[in-house]
Length: 317
Image 1 (spheres, rainbow, N blue to C red):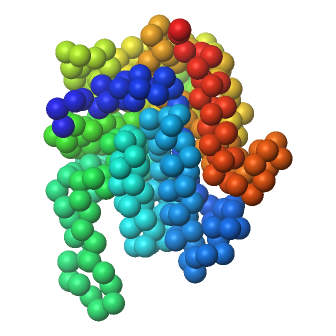
Image 2: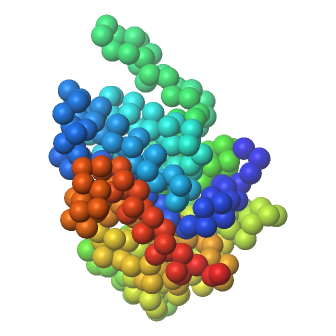
């Protein structure tokens, strides 16, 4: 790919005037009954629902994210659906982040990197066992970027970066996560006064600074950053000036657009703010049901519009 991942992110933000990402993490029990009843298995319903969500949000956002765990639990048929959904999102002109959070020592990380970032087709069932289809994953069924665990250090990150660079894709390294107990490790104070996540962020930015293109201030290595402590957010933005942030926590996790203003640079770039349940399950909310009844797609569309309009308030004019 001739255009860098960072440039493609900025193109997506410019074209939609929205720095939002929609997380599509379907749980069968929460799907609309109208979708559940026409499928004889969970995965079929999840895939139809996810395609409907993509169609409902594509006018407002340029990026979607799939967490592989919601599909991986179903084995091969779930992974097939995950791949098809990436391809479907690409057909709608969307960038896709694969939320895989892989990480390990170098030689094992290399296998994960090949699996999720290499455009070389691979065969999941080379022996063609009776009754089992052979899966061949082509390059369009790969995400444009993936999330990885950077706490193994550079030797665990390097295989992903090497594969990413050869394919023109991106990675987002976990720096500060949104779960309740994250602070017990990630906010520990080091001898130099920094918190653990700040030290990790500094490393990520140094890896990025070596890979800047002439057209962008940002490198292809992003960071998952989820603190809503304003002082921490300001410090991280200063610590990581060349790093695009992927920021979970909006909506169902309690975050508002104003919480995420410090992550954006002066031009309104540098961060992708993610919303999930508050958008994709909008049909459960009484205010949307009152407006649209059983039209769950209209509910999702309206919730995504509200999400995009909320983020627009923190974007520079």
